[in-house]
Image 1 (tube, rainbow, N blue to C red):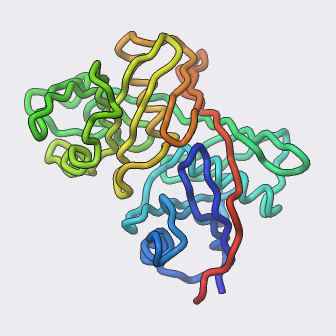
Image 2: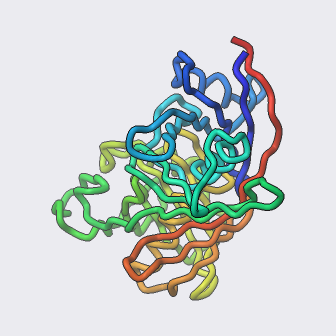
Length: 282
């Protein structure tokens, strides 16, 4: 029997597992546990391992079994899991977590000994084509990754960037709520322009401090929210001069806040909520 905790942050839900000393096929387990009706149902699993370079190590698996480099919501929920379960007791109100995108620093907020929200240093957004990576005709490796795509009759003006994982952001004037995100997202995710597949976001500008975003996650499909997707969406808007240095992202599952420090580090802030605990039969 494998104990687990299901958590959600702005509607993005993950199953957290202590994987230390366990011997599972984590890719298959993520498929089995994430499947609605037949499993627990989730946007993936986050698994705890010991780290030689940080306080703790997190590995993230998507519902299709693929492994993700980083998840902004996932790392906040992982933080709640390891602190609430006393797997790690933070010092100086921070925890350093080894991820597939290097070591991330998380600043948890606690009430009555439980984590209720966290701030995450997501890294400096990267707008260099070769670092994302993308492979688009007429765009050189060192170029700014902005281009047009036509998918299912929709002309998409795309800004690509990396937040430790690859993102394609389409800032549009038409209503994102009426856009066929799932149909278009399935094509964009696996388009030949993106050798590692890509996360796809569509965005409306509400004001200099507020945007509306919908997110199609690589390996998961449309999700109610995403930490990296929100960070990428806000960063793309800022890169194009459309927002200021603090942005509220309105998502189907709730709201997340993005800001940037003096070193261009993107900071993600949002809630962390336990849904329930259970055991998975071996």
